[in-house]
Length: 211
Image (cartoon, rainbow, N blue to C red; front, top):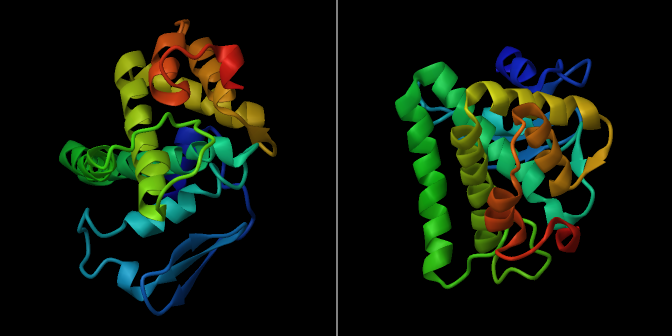
């Protein structure tokens, strides 16, 4: 997992030592140099692609969430949406395309539940969410789906180049959604204003209004 994530980030594991603290229950939480993982969140059988999400998700935060973090909670999706997407990308690498699609389908299902409740907001929305589950459906699940759409739109070469550029340029600092947009545009040579307006800032919002 470390080798895969390091290659995609364009940077090695940001800490000299990384630990996993095993506790009871279904805990899954990252910290600066370690993750807390509940025994109920761990795989129950080897090589089950549905079971290792917590391990890779919390490890991924060493890059996106800790090495780079959002400037304000308005852009919290950058921490969690990218990490949720990278969990799916790891599963594709480890288990194949079907596992990638299955992980994205889980995100799609959670997002659709929020939409069925009449709650679909732009990723960089600064309002109040009715429940924690709905907030996660937007920031985690919709965020992951947006990253997957970016990958389809740009193609693998430009997409991964953009993610590496974003990570290297902002390592040790804070970011907003504009920083990701600029990195992806520089890597691809494409104008991504319409796509970011649709998913991240809301229809009709300009880049200036969104900041």
